[in-house]
Length: 202
Figure 1: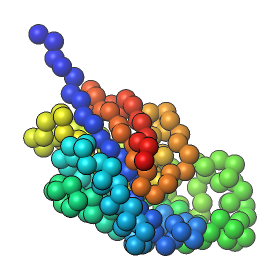
Figure 2 (figure 1 turned 90 degrees about the vertical axis):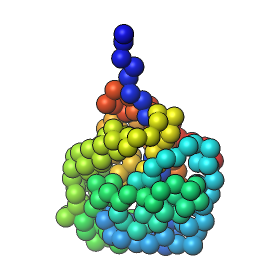
Figure 3 (figure 1 turned 120 degrees about the horizontal axis):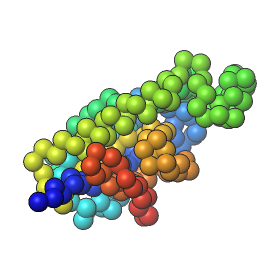
Figure 4 (figure 1 turned 135 degrees about the vertical axis):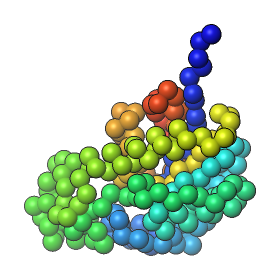
């Protein structure tokens, strides 16, 4: 008798808005909390996921992602989120806390190099390959460790825009444009691999 391949549906979401998002400052690994707008976005995202049978919630340990996940889990009646540091945003080193204009002014050479090749590492930043390695390991582990849930139940993961885009590029071959706060993708995981990613429209 043939073995049926293990399948899992995951939802991968970007956190709600922060004040630094609003004014265009790079956050990276800096722990900036949600704004009131971000909390409202988390509630709206929960409502969008209400019929998705979310059984588990995981999130970056950074407060903007973790609080987004906590709001959603509470709204859906799901267990409290599990924090995982591997889901954090890429550390952007010297660019963190700056606007795009300030990056260009203070680090013109590094900024031009980054614009020409987003794999370029700003001074003190985390290499993109390391970001991809850690978030892919976390996502695969989360998808594989079902914890007794049925395949009809789904998992929600709340992470960050840059980390999500790097992960989707590496695993699915898709490079989405910069993500809005509260953006969410539906992923299909089967036989140890992520096979598809579809952004859910509001």
